[in-house]
Image (tube, rainbow, N blue to C red; front, side, top):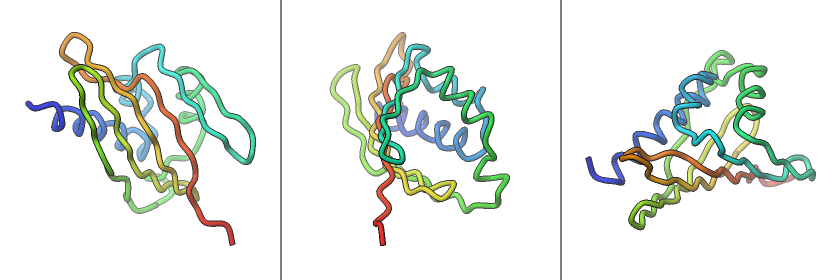
Amino acid sequence: MDDHRAIAAVLGDYFKGLYTGDTVLLRTVFHPAAALFATRDGQPYHKGLDAYLDGVAQRASPASLGEPYRMQVLAIDVTHDIATARVHVPALGFDYVNYLSLVRRHGRWMIVNKVFTDVRVSG
């Protein structure tokens, strides 16, 4: 499988995990030491993987709320064993853009860093 398709498969599992709230599946796409950063409601946000997954487990999933599945890959860029992906994640009243850094370890792509923001236009 070429790199873009392999990364797209990881991103598909990422989207499915986010949409359904499946933290077991989400754990498979992240490196155990992954870091997540953002600014939410004007406040800095930084979590490690376990804290992030705990938050996902505590919230209602978009699927359980009957939200349409609209997550999509916007771009993938690969250089040797590193890659970035820009993805759109509209869910739970937010309109997130995520920038994901990935590395290939032992032939498997995994997310090592997630930086995200809500891009809704304020009215």
